[in-house]
Length: 178
Ligand code: GRF
Image 1 (spheres, rainbow, N blue to C red):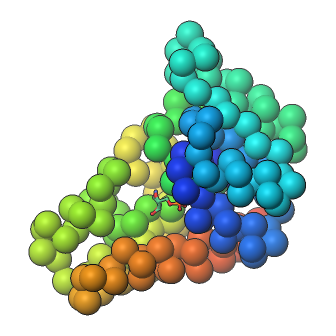
Image 2: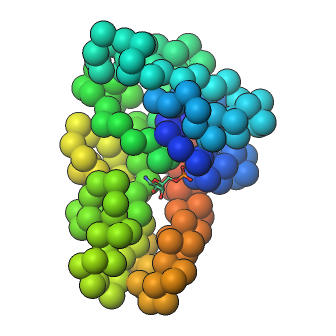
């Protein structure tokens, strides 16, 4: 049973839904995220947990973890989720929180990974699926796939295509693992 954390468009959430993986809850730090609409359309419970509604980040994360566990979530996938998770959240899903990131980590962590790769002039970038820890895109790598930078006009599109193929595959493999 998977819970997905989102902040924006939700194309990676859509890839998980299209792969018919058992997504049982979708949580966001932003009320207006398009991804919440995708969850609604798929009939999956969706909740917004905006920081403004809580005394601090830990309280938000505990409330969000409670809500996910009430929906039966055992594994969490961050799919374009733009906040760091606190230990208060991570300890509820030990080694069961994944993230998808548009670079070959540890290269280019952070929110501008594709632009940073272009600015650095590398020939190859890619996609990483990794376990989440308290750091910024810093947990152990589970799977990576390279993507050539050229032709750069289509780099964003090609990276997203790899994400949408790789993420559901890795999640499915982990769900099946003992
Ligand atoms: C993806 O590129 C993901 O790797 C990054 O944020 C983007 C989210 O896109 N962390 P979406 O919301 O899944 O469409």
